[in-house]
Amino acid sequence: MAGKLITPDLAAVLAARSIPGLVLSNRLEGRPRAEAFDRALRAEVRDALWMLTRQWQLGEFRGDDAGSPITAKVRVDTAALDGYRGGDGPDEPFDDGTPLETVVERLPAPFTSAGVEAALDLRLLMGRYWLRLVAYLGATVRSAYLLVYPVHRPDPDDPADAPICAHPQAWSAYQAAAGRLMDGAKLYQHLIGGGSASDGIAGADAAVDALGERFVAWFDRLIASPRSGGNAAFQPPRLEYRFSATAAQRTLVAEEYDQGRLDWYSVDASAPTPGAPEPPAGPTEKHVFTMLPTAVTWGGMPNTRWWSFEDGQTNFGDIRPDTTDLAKLLLIEFGLVYANDWFLVPFTVPAGRLATVRGVAVTNVFGERTWVRAASSDPARWSLFTLSEAGQPRQPVDLGLAILPTAAKVLDGPPVDEVLVARDELANLVWGIEKAIPLPSGARAHGAEAAYETLAYFTADYVRRNGHEPTPPPGAEGAHLRYRVMTTVPENWIPFIPVHLDGDVRETQLQRASMPRTFDGDTAPPTPVHPRTWLLRQGLDGGAQQPYFLYEEEVSRAGVRVTRAFRRTRWRDGRVWVWLGARKQTGRGEGSSGLAFDGLLDLP
Image (cartoon, rainbow, N blue to C red):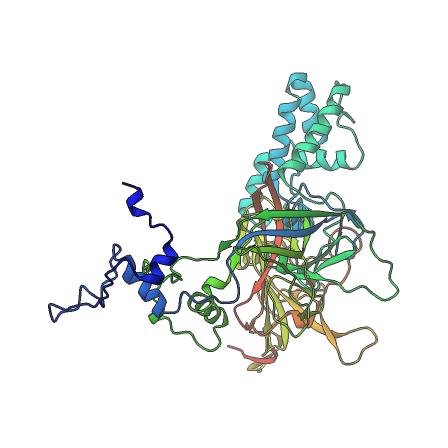
């Protein structure tokens, strides 16, 4: 049977045409049987031939540029951050085990306020913890610690205790704790100053000194704060933070950090200073990653294939971008025009590193390999995620990406104190308005209420010293007017006056001043009203008093709002970090103090 289908000497048979054949041909064409073409125009899944035809009509079979990438190798160089400097402070090793926000922002614990002992709630917490540690030694040792480290008992007749005695809430808290509870902050300051926990305590043994080290470590874990001095990163004249970090002979500088959220955009690459020594070179690690590229997509983006239908999450027909909405225009153009031209090649870089992509080797489906270099660092070229030169934010100078060891989420507590720096055009002054102040008990009080209570305290003190209410002197006989030198403002309004810079007769800066506290009929010299918040008390505490200057360009017409609050985050090792940090925000516009000079008053 199989032999019949085989023709021997096929070439001779074809030449002689000895075996006849039948050849038929016909044209395939559609024959419409109805006038409705709805079904014929449907893109039904089972109609594969129709879908291929539509692809051919739309030009999807035409090759463009190259094949799709199938594999990619990425060469990345990383350098660990190895140095840190806060402001003009000393160089320190970079602490990779602490959130960078904590290292930069942490301020001293608020153990003092307005020249008196403060944070009574924190002091009592520390005292209770220490007494639990030494409870095994008995009641005698406990009583000894209460005598050596007592809670301050304020004296209502002492004007130095006015920040406590003027406020009933703070006064009652101190009166309830004095003589009954221990001040743990005094013991903590004694220990970090070089003392021992057993100093002056009868019956304390050497084991108590070991408990003292445990006590200090406990508080350092509870609240992260600099032990001595202050935070060099915070710049009071600028109301913001300034710090720098080094990695592989490159310096990353943050000149103006005040947002409360640190990331790569907070730092700039510092150009080397001519003649200055270069930072020491740190180790550089080289990494090669191999992976499969993935098309870049986002929710609601149009599908690149014709037969795929979108879910309708984004209505592109309803988008009306303006000419200034660059980000929206770029997103629309990417989704509609260049969607299939971008691929994602992810790789992981540890935190605390400066990463630089040296190049990418891409292999497409045709086996062709292409070496893709980094984009140009030409200053005229627009780029994303590149570090700018310090002082020139529009000029990218480094292709590295700073992966800072920052917290993923930071929780902010209520402000401990709040200052609003605003301009007063009528009085031609700048005022530091204390909107909220910390009471010595640890509570927070409204600035206007605290100012009223403070003035009432000193008024009562005047009555106690003179035996009568403050009354103005009687007017001259027959006079119907009285001359008033100036009006008064609430005591929570602290003035800033313009002064010339040293050696300059044109540029000015703002210097903190003070309003006088006067009473009608008082012949004693007026006393200055000092601020109560930590920011405005710069230079007043801790030794000889120093003036406080504020750069005038930092106070815009909208003003500046500065708050100090506790911040909390959970680090990658599970530990909770708490610190006290400051934050600067835009104010609410100009203010009016009502201060006026050279007035006349009608006499009854």
